[in-house]
Length: 388
Image (tube, rainbow, N blue to C red):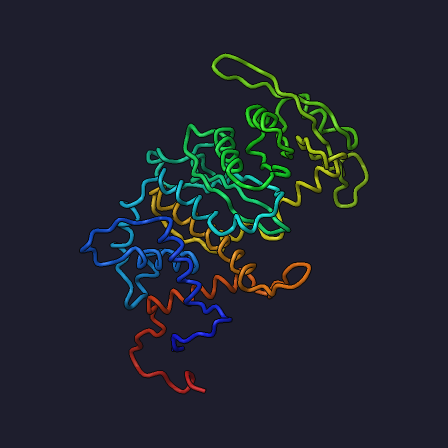
């Protein structure tokens, strides 16, 4: 064990775990009874550990020698969080350190993620229903809003979707978040889940520059996307609200690329983007700028690397795990920039500190804190093959 006297110029892995647990404890207070056997910090230590480890709370607690019982933790997770409140504080939590890293102008992206639900069909009341994908129509669905800064992503908000939520209601909430930031929005990149008349009307009302890949609804657009070369056309969608219908018109940039070096009519891939932005003048611009939104590291891919596994149907507990997995990314980016970079003229030099290594450090710190067992009982002493 190292002593607690640590050099000022290093961050040790146990301090990373403390940073995460303190962040959660500060923004997402848990009211536990005075005589409770465990503290909120104990609970968050296990949740952060399970996310970094990519295992379930039960698995982690089962292998821990001085950690709390899994049932106790799961009981508190199920009973102490109200969904709306968790969502509100989660967004404050995600933004608390990173807003100071945002430049004056920022590009923002919004995504809808559907995680398939394969459980009991009668028990899908808190889930989001959408057209069938991967063999199911019920999903644990989340929308995330993030800022893209030099190929890095900072998550600004996350929202769980239920039936009755529409892409435009989520987008309106996200625009509320953007209004509250001190930075100017340079452009909004949305995934195709936001391609509908209400979202386009909302974008035009806010006067944001935007790019959204289109969905081939209707014969006109199917025809346009099956022939011809790169070009810009005017297109419109009709919306309906309480019996009133309206039409929203917008430019569509159709970009054509050759597939696998084939140069005949069948070797052409056409992509359509609804786009309206001063820096987009050609279909190729639309495709190039939209492709940038994925950044170098996709938040969603990273969150799949570090999220607690669970079989619970409790939507709030699942949301908490998603929030913690997004917090891990934001904290890594914040700490990387603020503490691990070397300040110098013309910007900072970032030390090589990949996300995977950060996660491994947090995981090891959680294992140490929870005294996860490092040996298993054997029915006879290990022979020579176990020694060197």
